[in-house]
Image (cartoon, rainbow, N blue to C red):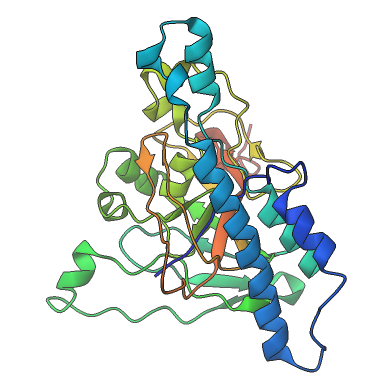
Amino acid sequence: MAAYVTAIPATNGVTSAQSSVADKGSGIPAAGDPNEAYKHTQSQIYSLQETIMDSAKKSRQTPKSISPENSASPDAASYVSAAKPEMDSQPILQYTRDKYMHAPKLIGEINYKSEGAGAFVRYVENNETAHMPHPKQLPFPYNFAEQYTPNCFLPLFGRNEINNLVKIKIDPVEITKFLTGASKRTYNREIWGADIYTDDSDPLLALQHVGFFEKVFVKGANAGEKQSPKRTPGNYANPDNVIGGPYISPDTRLEVTIILLDKLQNYAGINRYGVNSRSWLGPAAHDGLSFGIYEIKVIQPTEQIDISGWKT
């Protein structure tokens, strides 16, 4: 189904993404051979991921001599806390920026559905929209399997959409269903990766995994940690691009913009903010694209009412 790696800088002082960029000046296949060009692109990404995976494994290792059970020293405890691996998607984002050479463009929107596939509405010229065909759904009782394992929410996007943006509109009913644990996607744990996710991952689970619902879910020691929030790790320029103030349920709507990224060879899952994301380490590669959270817009109930026509 899927594939990912967490983007952590290489340990030699130069990020793995920078290494890939430096190598772009040589060995690029001729423009007339698209197959070789595609293989070369994938080779660069896979090499970047191998370096990242090695760094991630090393960062998870805590020396036995300073583990909590071997020392009661506060300094030792601080070291263990600091050694907790942090995810960083910047190398992958830098690679994407350098390869596609254009600013991300918003290409359309889709209303979130927890019970099935969403229908993508593409933006076209003159503020018009074009609807993609909605996936056909089986009638009752033949939809028995879909009731418990709904189709992937995001449609399949082609490689020509990489480095573009898609807006996902999430209404209060779906948010409440998610927060109360009534969503089948939550029950099925439909999330692969960390910061960069497979395109069959659930966007709401991804929001929780990046810490957007932290005040709702995180308790105990984790709640006391002082860290700069990075709730939009798919945004190269602003990793905490949240608009509209604090999240308030149950009448708040969300507009979540994601950035479409190339598929990765491996997706490493981690347990974070109450969500234990899945890993996909092959041997078969993911057959779709990836995405990262690019922007989160919180729309409060008072902003949802148009009072411009009211009489005073």
